[in-house]
Length: 151
Image (cartoon, rainbow, N blue to C red; front, side, top):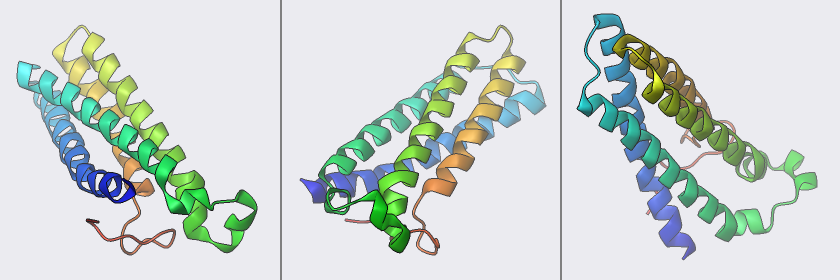
């Protein structure tokens, strides 16, 4: 089960990144270009947030079955930055990022004008993306190195 959840979590991150980047692109284009907030923009807003929630649930599931977390003790983390990263930092930052994305999606949905919808989405999705990028265990990260895709 661990390897299945790990592979799903690893692959699904690309769905989330593509969705959030698409949302950011359309949001800035709409905000700065004075465009109309279309049904497609709304679908991208909603789908990006939904994909992020699915990824978060996969991440929580992985956290529960991970052998790394099963042996994790905070007092040992100062000697093992990878354990600290996955035991505390990654899960905390991703939870914050998805919360920010969710708030931004909900606020954008409730705005009165198209410009306000795009502006809200652009700002909140950008903040969420920056947090996500910090929390991803990139192959060259000093905190924890992982390949781009784990199968």
